[in-house]
Length: 345
Ligand SMILES: Nc1nc2c(c(=O)[nH]1)N[C@H]1C(S)=C(S)[C@@H](COP(=O)(O)O)O[C@H]1N2
Ligand SMILES: [Mo]
Image (cartoon, rainbow, N blue to C red; front, side):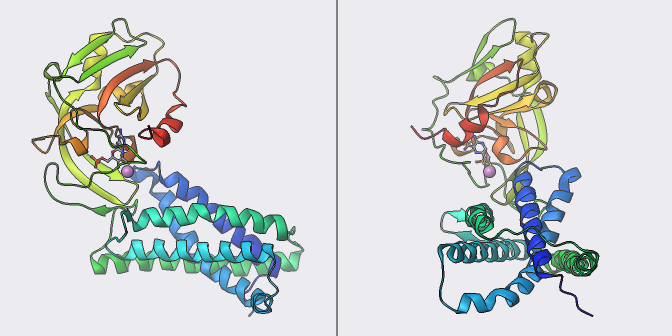
């Protein structure tokens, strides 16, 4: 039996698989709770199934590549292929191993960057070569067989990968993040992009609570009573996680002191660097502003004097070096710019 779909439907399958990988890859940056583990599952199945489609495609076009009369379009096509294979290889190696670094960055970050870079040559490739696939009944039947093979390989590979990682003792969280042990402040210090403020002098530091509140408040370090604790798991998109007991003050206490306006719906946590993230009001009320981790005072690298603890959120949302809390009546779209530009000044 012939397993390979018609040429145009192999190509169509590649496009769909890559689109699914990009969408789930980007979504994974926000998926931090087990309820969303399926996003990572779909990503893995598509990533393991894609090589089957690429094999069929390459077997067909390899003659064209050998002839040596490469156009700009060919360069784009080959770049898209090379980046895709590199993204697949780094993703698989990350998942199977205990994690790896490339210079100052983690292998998982390299995987993500390679995956995002695929978009550029892929768009050129599509502009040059896109054809509407042919879809008569016979083509559809053959494609159904071929796509089933791809799905079966993806699912079997997904299962085998889990078993292998478990056997190697390298199985991470469903997010792909690897466990970091240690105690207190002993875990990686991570910046999302460029934040690297000078250490903060606690006697000069203040926390302000403002925005849609009845009273603007200003706290000094000594006014923040660290009476609340939470055990919470910090999971960085660069591929590590650590569970710690955090101690500090629940945001709700500060909000009660300030008196929240009736139409308030969001709370923004802003760092001394301008980095900021926003939580819906109800979630913010329960979120801790930590002064301590694992019984130790936070170190500068982990956000001293005050950092947000946002359970169920990816690490980049756990704002460090918080100095301002703004109660808002509207969502804060500017945060999407701030997290990329803070620290560059
Ligand atoms: N102000 C600020 N807060 C930040 C970041 C940052 O770059 N600036 N990085 C975030 C990221 S990407 C992660 S994973 C966590 C890491 O916290 P840690 O450095 O204490 O491990 O902090 C988050 N909080
Ligand atoms: Mo992170």
